[in-house]
Length: 176
Image (spheres, rainbow, N blue to C red):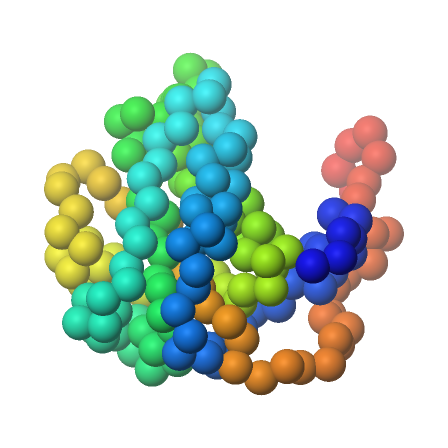
């Protein structure tokens, strides 16, 4: 794959909802997982664990947590889990950063996948109790998000995504 800038990669990344049945090569999977491992976390606590689901039976079972066939038909599903008790907590107000840390790891993996030509789609609208049971999570472990991982089934022409302009999202010195 030709080298692109980070902003080109971020602009090119898309949510993919159709996957080829082709297996994801182990080297590519390891690159994606390594990107997650290298993500920053508050006080470097790294309160995450990644579950790689390749077996069709478990992928199908995850359909009970997120009922979209395209989700479990991808050759791999990644679940990013967090352990809030391992995360840094801000002393001023008790804010636990596990969710933010897990989101950073997931984002790193999704961008690494895009760079490799793999598709992903952030799944947050899942049934957490069902995912917890299907993935066999112990108490104190939560799923932040899941993503299918695989080769996109359809080559789509780059399209402009709707994003607010910087002028609507950036403020200087203070709010407003």
